[in-house]
Length: 462
Image (cartoon, rainbow, N blue to C red; front, side, top):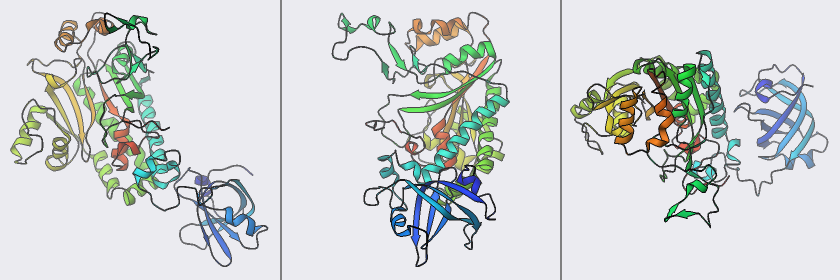
């Protein structure tokens, strides 16, 4: 008897073949003559029904232990089911209870628990329908990301988690040190990082972009997909201290090619999920956000609108709407502005370009007007910004000027500047927060519910 997942077994016809079902019990219903046991192994959100007759040897001893959460190994025959919800069910001839889950202690007894409660038991929440579906979709999207880039000739680069430079210049970084925190060496009242493990100040990365540029300027098209960190003390539904970023970098690519790639990439991921995760997406569509499948299909088929930041500000101002954050040229657009552009004005995704240089990072290429940079943000309905990117500054002197203008330590970027001295070339790239993309696809409202183990302010349980 070959081991098969429940997902595979559910595709078989019930013609009496022997099957092995291994998983965890979701529910048990008892009648006068039989017990109906739903077993799930996480391979699909659908459970398989095992029908246990009261004449089964040892029924009175076994049945009380067949409760929600218990793990079982069941051998039986797959037979046609008279029920409407499934075409086949299992008639068992051998049942082994591998792990009990006492009903008086097991936390997952109700059909539905609040997401707040489930965050407190992150070690058990994957067993619920919602979080099982989230993780299967996350897995499918991870595969689709690698497949898209591989099929399009990108090289996967593992950029460092520990870094000596701040990509964004924001300074909200976690420090990495080997110091005895009770005895930190100081010189003239300041921490002496020359005595630390790396001989200089080190942090957890906020982005792999700068390092990815090194390889783009040698291998042409590369991408990095890994964990990034922000020490931002925001305890909201939109913030995590640890999250995953997808960051492609492309040499000999200007802002227009960057926008083309971003649009194709988003559409590819959406189509892949819709085609390969139908059961889970139907669950999200019915239980989390009505109409989400239709919305994703619309976006996958739409041509993204492309407008400048100046045009976006003008559209917002002439709309007549009163926003919580007033609209003026030079502001960093807020989520309410981004959602209004995509949901009310254009009714589809929008790519905004040419932002004021003062609200963007130092590495973005200056436009000829000296006031704006070749940045591009992809905005989508319901969420707002989902991708941020730009054409990178390829001119040594202009880049050096921006570093000094923003008060950054140019010694930390000596290698980044040298890339502009030796064979510099136009190049572009963007960053996409993976968890935000999963939120967009599933309709989940809190970013902590789309990552296996959320890391945020005052949360480090697992």
